[in-house]
Image (cartoon, rainbow, N blue to C red; front, side, top):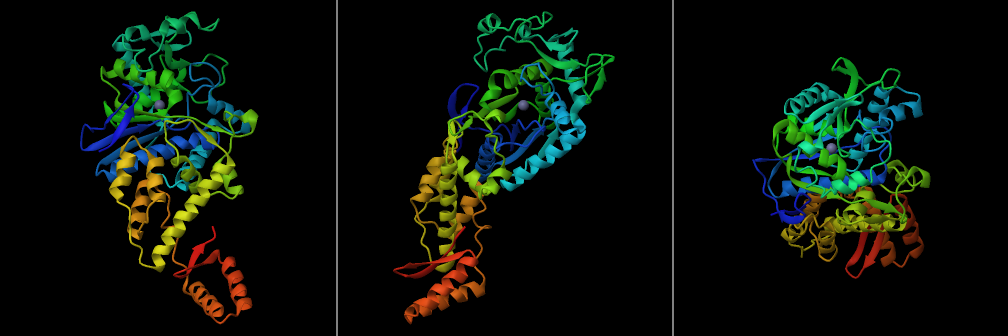
Length: 447
Ligand SMILES: [Zn+2]
């Protein structure tokens, strides 16, 4: 059975679902630009989580949200709304920007062969629920109003610092000069922001007789409340979400419902690229489309991601992506061999499942695959677990091509090497090569 590292208590522990259906929530993208490959790693790791749960015989109900309002330049309550920024950059409306980048994100998502969440939740579809949530928090005495919006009084939630092991005293000492004097505690955050006269913010809703919009953290607490109900089984996100975003989601849920938000929390780590942080200024915000231009499929990238552990910091280089691509092609050609001869499996698939059940140790599972012989049936199971489309991407070669393989074999037997070479060239045009082995020739895909 699955064991996972639970951020809530910093321990690897057995996963026990509450009900028949495992309720999972994944913090999704802010849809103001194309996702770069660093953004996409999380969804690949959580795809493995979902597939692992399913292979353990569990049913999954997962919600993935799409943030199209309220995420400001900093994760706290400062700076411009990212969607507004995107709209300015492209001379479009925020609504067009949201639609455009939701489409782009879903395209990437499908190209990576990720399991579809049961619910895609778009933040702006939950505004009336957000307002109800603010009212519940206010009724329960957790909020106060400032000229900037409705704020959460973190001193009212005794466990506020627990999840992220925050040092609130240190936070206070380190607070930047100029933070709103109206805030009672430095860790207080906006659950609802007011739009000041003259302020540009196209997405706006009336509440408390003024235009405004929800604070970023609120959408996740609200969507979970509406779509799944507390507590959920697993909440996933990136390690950067721990100190502010997830801490605030937990606080909001407690203020709204008095309940715990999630029983297990999974956080994946960052990747660096060539040893550097991913940033616009370094020009390393590669997208899947850019990887494709360099000859790598989205699934080569998925292979790269899964060859490491979700909790490790990983360094991406194009050499390591090349190695992942080679490994994927090697797996495909081992699969192709199963079409050509009777392959006896030496793999116990339960060992692979045991590896991923051990806190999603995909590198260990990959090692087992590399060091065993797999049957066609095994490869199908590997696809179910990792979603690498190995079977789909490795069809049997057409009859015509197979005929060429045999003709080449005959030419070689007759020592007509000129003809054999000519056929070899014809085969490479069809992306097929022939390897001569002691047991006779074997065809393989070239890419
Ligand atoms: Zn979230």
